[in-house]
Image (cartoon, rainbow, N blue to C red; front, side):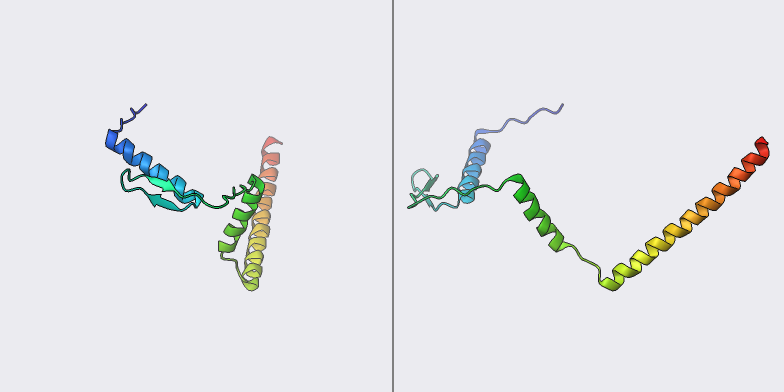
Length: 113
């Protein structure tokens, strides 16, 4: 198990500041930096609306749609051509394996008598 590196005081301050900035940026609130503290201060907004988080199913559907839009779909001709290739290879392999199965069945029947 690897030892966890201890953070220096400067690194802790920098990490805390980065975390504050991320939280403020995520909330969408306006930020005003105070001159003395250099820490972000949120301005009071007239009416802060809490954004409702979508449930897991809605998020899944939205992300799935986004991914499907990125897919490079084949044309109708390409899809038809690929379907014919897959079907013909499947039929050929079935016949090939069936033939050798029949040969080995006859061979073992001859040997075992």
